[in-house]
Structures are given as structure tokens and as C-alpha cells.
Length: 139
Image (spheres, rainbow, N blue to C red):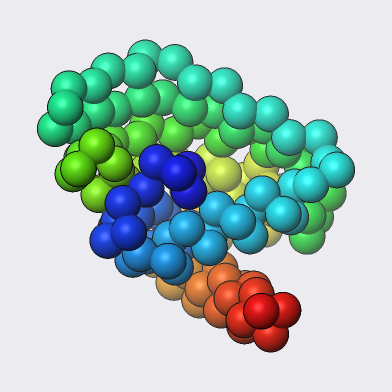
């Protein structure tokens, strides 16, 4: 994704909310690093594109680190292109379905609420911020 993203990319999904530029690229770095050495699989299908826009379905299979539960997340992605790269990327998926798989009963009970989405966004943004600070410290 890093090679496909325009420097001014905007990314959006239910877990992270809206990310811009290097922050969006760092999200992918963080997610891939977290899955390193673990069982992780991605399948793509229904890929459609023009020079201006595209869409795809992708499915991620992984173990959610905090609970050890298996997740199969089905995502509908849409893209807009600029200068041959992705300038806008929106992923849509059922946050409730994801929460139920990743968190079990807790996700089943609260995964559909605005409160849960807000807390998840805060947590993912905090983790991304920590990751970015560690990357800067390594430089």
C-alpha cells in the first residue's frame, strides 16, 4: 500500500477514522509489523478500476492480538487516483461483525454502539501515535 499511496492520501475506515498522508502509510506499517510472524492472509476480488477511481473487495484473516480470537474481516474498498497513485481510500466493513469476532461477548454486546466506535478510534489512534513516536526515535 505504501508504494500505491500518493503523498497526500486520505484513508478512512471504521477502526481508525480518517488518516492523512504519512499517518495513513504508518497505519499500514504498524498493522503489517504487528502481524509479522503470525498467521495472516489477505484475499482480493471484484477489482474494478479506471484511471480516476476503483473499488475492490478484500478479506483479511488474522488473530486479534488482544484476545487471541480469529477474525475474518470482509471489506469493501473504494479508491480515487491522482498522478497514478491512490489519493483517497475508503474501507467499509461491519464494525459490529468485526467486534463480535475480535472481542467475543463484549463485542457482541457493545460493538454496534457509537460509544464503542469512539473508544476504538481513540485506541487505534493512540497505538498509531505510539508507533510513529517509536519510528522517529529509531531514526
